[in-house]
Length: 396
Image (cartoon, rainbow, N blue to C red; front, side, top):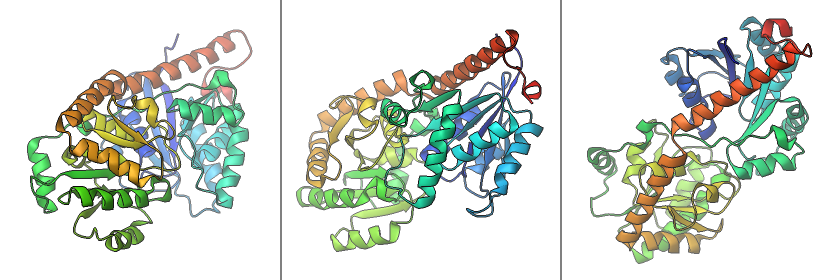
């Protein structure tokens, strides 16, 4: 039924390097520009992924330039923006953007509201976060759809009292360039960090935050080194815990073995260098971009059995699962991969097959386009029956 070009607002806190932020950027760039006009709005400006959108055809980028956590004028600015841009569909990502986005959409009478859930962050128990989550729980009931990126996220959403009929699981998708790594790329990574060709590499790509539990990764690294002393460990990502993790690596005698690579715009060469891709998260995972990219690059995986991790593949299909916080089990599973090349190759091959079947970027984008079309057509049907206006202008 859809005939007109729909204005879609994608709202996020900022465009730092992060999983949800990466998915939003890929979605905005990938939407069919003949059918959808994406407007990306951030609460705060100046983060690195903005550069990708500034060069993206058919994508408009606007910052509300929020001045700290007490600047609630950003809510009024967002409401006015939704009206002036004649936004038909709004989809906020993360806290507090969901609270701001749904509130502003109600004020602006934006026709279609979609909440996006990434499985929650239970370690964040700050008063501010609790307040925003409380507000979001109430406002999400007014959303037309709630989109988690895993069945674990779906369970989390339902536990918050959201109507089951509104929940649609859409898994993350990964762009082709993020699963392409040439031999020269791997050689360049090894050379830049002084890693010899014969030294096995175990790596993780994750923000250096409590939820990712790099402490357990480092403990496992210490155990692995006692069995395979030549192993090197590649930690890609940055965050507030970096100083203390660097100290912890020294305490464990790993200073010569661990590389803190920091943020990297191009991740594929780093993941492609890994002989084992390890994810040590202890708190939450919806649909890990790191695991998807590792699967796309045919890397064998060791991951904690939490959140949506197990949904990505069955244990033994693309990798091995361990309980969160169990450094000994993590080390044992990783050593199985490092000492059995045939097993590692088989896990990588299976992971690549699963990735191609389920987690490509076109698959994700089509799912969102179908959802946008369905929800807008539903509004149009209600308008025809006289229950609701259909266009954003008429809605106001």
